[in-house]
Length: 415
Image (cartoon, rainbow, N blue to C red; front, side, top):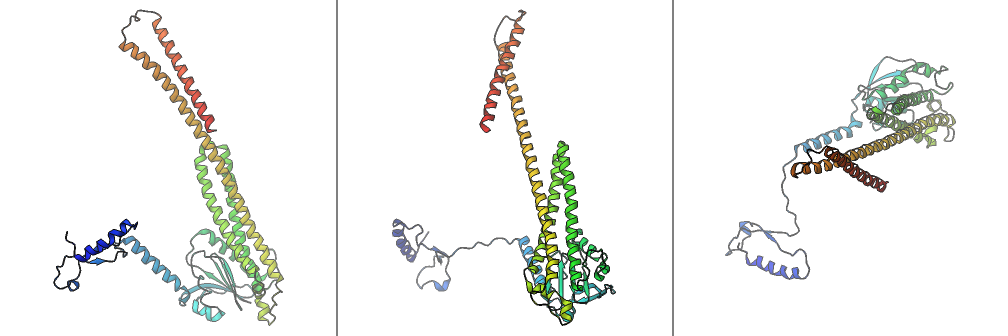
């Protein structure tokens, strides 16, 4: 290969640096230059200089699956980012007046809700999202927005809007709405015996009804799952032959408990956020504010007592579910230990059988070699067979005893 004078000078400058301890010499890779860059009178050798530190990129074949996934991610992210701006989205709702009477079914767009109730588009971002979302309570000047999984409420001093979602991802969140709507009119009227305190303002009765529906649903989920867990644990103690199926059942129950514990933790966090802010608790009194009697920041005793009660209820579900999951985990660890012991016992039994087979094989092998390849005159002897069998049994017993002793020594070393 021909090298130009410029290239040879570069190589001569790089050689001393190699001997001076330089790991990477300042050599250059030469590729084909353009015709205009070739000096007049010099032969074009088809080489072009590349910067030594510049990486050489290789073009790989595009992955169509990654491209499609990236495009889908971009489209979905763009749709989510434009959610607050979708003011023409129709929201189905049922209106309840101050006496708890339900009005006919109706629809409103997000833009109409923003204009009529003094809200912003950011407040309605997750109002029409079919997923559970994150529970929260938004307190505005004249409106409360209550978002508890698929229960979406807009509360004012004398009216309530219950929004209805078209799609429900799971059955459990739908139970909350069904529990809330059950006897809702009686609860809003403050009828005794329905779990809502009598004498509270309208907005506090709605808030208590919503929190009661959520916490009661979580408590019911926990109680039902606990019954199934206890039944499965009793089956584990009685039926040792079905441990595998019982472990699978316990795994499914742990998943249910984890979901219940997570939702209860989210409700507790939403209630705690309001409890931590005195201004928000005082601003919940919408009826008094509408009547021209706003509460001072420190005057929120009824709201604080109400929220503390449901904070403790949701926290109890969290603690009970966590404790039950710990019990299940301990049971699974005990079962795994039992299975390990059984597995070790099976391995020891297999080792003992192999030792016996080895002793029999060695004894019969010696007898076979002697009978087939050694000339003897014991065929006519009456005691030769008995002696041979006895010798083989003694050899088998000796080899087996030696093997069992070595096996016990190995077991003691592991312990």
